[in-house]
Image (cartoon, rainbow, N blue to C red; front, side, top):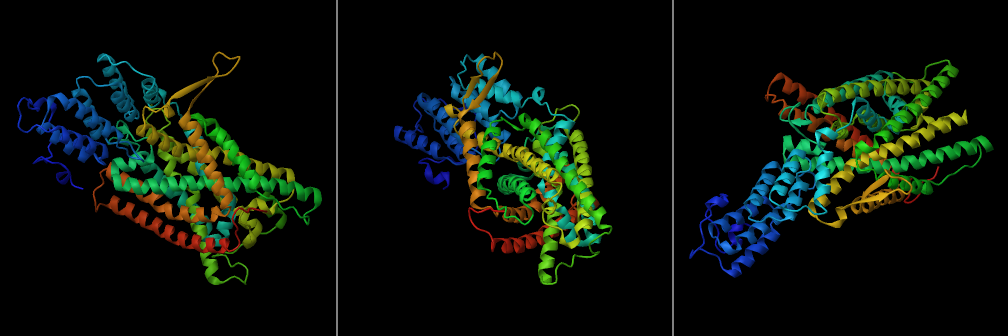
Amino acid sequence: MRMATTLSQPPTTTTIYSASKTPQPQNNPNSISSQQELSLLSKLHYCKSVSQLKQIHAFIIKTPRSQTHHVYAKKLIYSLLQLNHFFSPPNDKDLNYAHSLVKQWDKPDVYAYNALIQRMSSTSMQSFHLYQEMLIKGIIPDTYTIPFVLKACSHSLALWEGTLWTATAHAFTAVVGAGILALPWSVAQLGWILGPFILVFFAIVTYYIASLLCDCYRTPDPVTGKRNHTYIHAVRELLGPKSELICGILQYSILWGTMIGYTVTTAISIASVKRSTCFHDKGHNAKCGVSGNLYMLIYGAIEIFLSQCPNLEKVAILSVIASVTSFAYALIALYLSTAKLSSNHEFKGSLMVAMVVNTEATSERFWQAFQALGNIALAYTYCMLLLEIQDTLKSVPPENKVMKRVSLYVVVGTAFFYISLGCIGYAAFGNDVPGNVLSRFYEPFWLVDMANVAVIIHLIGAYQVYAQPIFAINEKWIGSRWPTSSFNKIYTIRFPCSRKGSLHLTINRLFLRTIFVVITTAVAMMFPFFNAILGLLGSVSFWPLTVYFPISMYIVQAKIKRGSCHWFGLQALGFVCLIVTLVSGIGSVAGMVEFLKKARLFHIEM
């Protein structure tokens, strides 16, 4: 609805006038009546955009009434601060506009400053200046002010503690997942010519695009510009709000989907340990069926506890442990595959796209090849978490240079394991290689069990790397929506018999994170075949999140001219990756249809 139709005396222009130009209201024929005052106040409450608020502000200033102007100002600033962007905070222009209104108040209250400090907490110096301004004006801080200031401190340069090695641990945890165990199958679907080539090609592509994205962490200058704390913030800053909305839906869908997939995969790994022990004790022909629902509940309970860690920086130790365990099960799988290859005394497999069993249709073989192509492309990517990891780094040396080194170490390390395990596993089993290479090994059972336990530990830590960005965006939105609620108040629980030991919690974190993990676990139990759906979701999101947005942001950040050689090169790379996304999506749909024919709700049994 246009504001001109909702105001009884609409302004002839929407220009925003400063308070210093406000005419004095004595005997002003344009003064508004009490009934109009109530109408304007109600309209302020229902405004859905900053532009509507500014129109009402212009109308109030042009038809003033001095004895009630402060009422309008207070209601206006409250309404403005209630306007929220779910994926990103308001832009600097809107926040500065809100701040200017607060400064024009004769007697601003503590709520207005609390709301401003909370909304500007991602830019710590602004929050500190607001707090200082608040004290100078004699406004007494309340129980909500200090937590907001401390939150701003957590974003200050002095408290960024991440290093090259902690960032490398986070990145390895995000990149190297249990999907590495499916790489021999993926190579088998492509054959000896295409398989290794695709593994090397996407390693190079991943590093190149990650290097471009590292320069988008700060804008407009990659070294001295303003920080973009998350991937979505960078998209909004460089590409605009429409791209931000699309990116947010895709990114948080794949993050949550990965959490569900990890829950299912962990239950399968725990069941594999139990089955391996059963086969060792009773023989390989014994019936050792295992249900995974109980293991999902156990995994969910562990993640509820770990979810109380405040942020990604505080779970660095989990990332280190997860990285070590990922190397452990990759090395065990590589050792077992090498031993199997040595006992065969021959290389198995075919040069071209795998000719699997003769009963399978030709079209199905191609669907599997398409799916394998997407699996390899997705195995390397971590762009949607790269900026979140980069945000943990110290500012000296420059974050973009450190993160490029992190990307190099991660891509080279993962490429070595991917190529080694993918090729050796394929050579050992040929076209009969299973989807999870560990499932074909039974002895030595203790080593196989150790590999599965390592997978479990890795997934426990990796879950938090994917969950923390979701927790952060939800809590930021709730905190900005209800900034003075006791829901966001920090409570300190001191440990008995300890002077320094304490735990800081908020009701928001305690209940909402718990509920979120419970819902995630329930969905995993309801749809134990979710990994098939996750494959399709990953295929669909690969091109926009891993290729299109990073390349588009870099073009804007580096001011690359349209039509230049560099521009055409980037567009060509994006087109190639788009083709990969399309064929991978086709393969994932075909695979999902076949899988869903045998799947059942609330049933995961091995």
